[in-house]
Image (tube, rainbow, N blue to C red; front, side, top):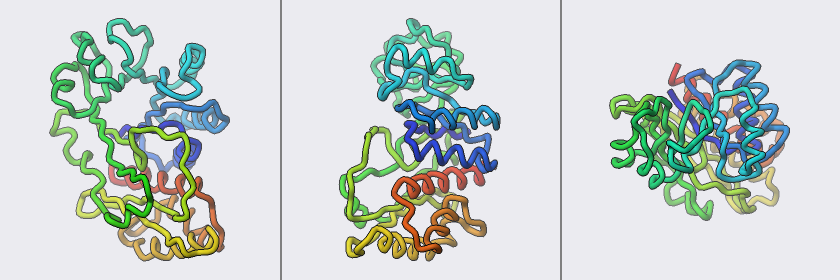
Length: 284
């Protein structure tokens, strides 16, 4: 079972919602959502997950953002979806009911009493934690390489992304988790860059790799840079999506065919959709 972790960013939620509504997200993929903003996009995503009966986990005590208040936590408890809780205090003192626990601070987890725990636990592969914690464990890893300057991806444009799906059960876990094409550290905003980027995953010999597509800085407009970038993406089609295009790639190619620039948000949405749909196909 795959439990991708999303921080509730607008275009990530739009990506998940569209996949759910089009029946393209496998039930073996159960997103964990840490909500950071009280938006209509967040509300509509929860409604879609509920209407289409797609299993998700909503973190009811987020550690950042607009819900990180007592009233915010109370509001999140009212949504009729499965809940997850970040272990932010000794486990035996936590009163919130949830189906999943998330280890954020190892020191707190190590000081807690786990003997009677019956809930799933999202945990990084640290020996002390794995030895201490009782209950079904979900492997949590951070695979995406975030670099401070997009130019730096030119040094390593293609790299291994994950093999967790191959060995998580052999390692004693009931599922695996990552942050998709993001990482554990949350950033509220991304600063403008003269370079456009697309981070697209693909399967190669049973391993999941990621290619960092970068535009040049030479184009006069964002549209020109996007169209040149998409020419390179098209040349990778046979690797990125084998015989059938993912919906994420289809969205990008449609914009390119119409010679329109979709905006960075839609590019992000399409990249997440592509990742989730590829994993859905693999896990099915």
